[in-house]
Length: 250
Image (tube, rainbow, N blue to C red; front, side, top):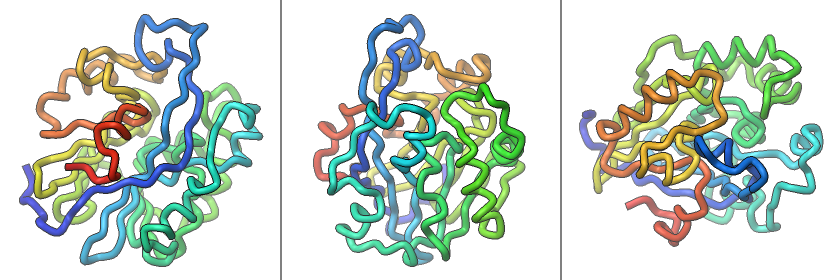
């Protein structure tokens, strides 16, 4: 484990929800059942500035994908506005970790002019030569990444320390270049499992997701879960808001 950074506290703001078929959420789920998955925007205040994990979704991108009527966002959940409510302006963000470039993660990636944006090379290469059948992506993914190309820090390794106490791990599985994030906090190691564990059911029952590009990588990550942290967070489970009602992971 990394040395604990006493100044790192992991928090989130709410930025709406997106639909997902149950068979995408976990193996054996009912394809006729659709759940709303929350989209928290995680952030940390550090001595080096604010670190964001992903950038939520843009309603315009949902329109491109034909799901504008299925995503949900209250006025207070606009990502830039929600960050402003906790005292964070776009220029305050110094690091942005893009776990992958699906629409609900890449939405506002181009809104932070001072941020170094971390993306795995496998994800970047996939997006820049995107097949028309790729689920969850759109031309907006490559357009936005091209817009911030000079801000990108492309990761080629399986592990990368963004800042002391903040580490990304390449896991693949859900997306070609999918990464998870480990954060050392005062209460222990937190692992943001992202979309390789959509909901707590994936974590607590070690039940793999059903939306993936590489099942073997999904299974490999599931097996690693017990070693990944003291607190394991799924990517889109509404239950997380019940467990952490004040938006602080502790």
